[in-house]
Length: 133
Image 1 (cartoon, rainbow, N blue to C red):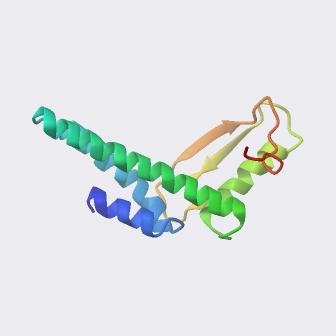
Image 2 (cartoon, rainbow, N blue to C red):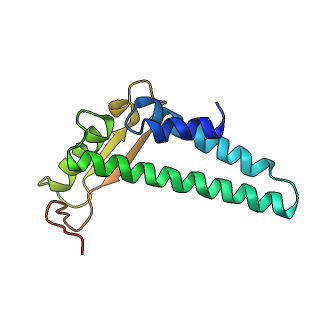
C-alpha cells in the first residue's frame, strides 16, 4: 500500500483498527521516501513538503481521535481504552514514579507487538477542570 493510500485510510476511518495498523507502515514509507530523495533541489523541496504534509495530517488525526474520545462522541474504541488506562494511572493514589506498561496488543487486536513504559509524573493532572481560554 502506498503512502497516500495509508493516509486516506487513516483520515477516512480515524477510529478503525485499520487506521491504527496503517500508521507504522506510513512511517516506514516516509523513511523510505526520505532515503531515496536524491534529486534536484526542487524535487527535494517538493518531497519535504509532502512529508511535512503527511506528518501534519497524522498529528491532526491524533488530535481528532483523542478529542472525540474525550468528548464521548465515540465509545468502546481502542483510544478510549488507552485514555482510560492513562487516566487511571494519573488519578491513582500511587506515588510519583509509579510505572505502567502500555502494550499495543491490549488496545489493538492484531497489531504488531510493541510496548511503552510510562511513569506517573510528579505533578497532578486534572483534565476535567482545565478550561481553554
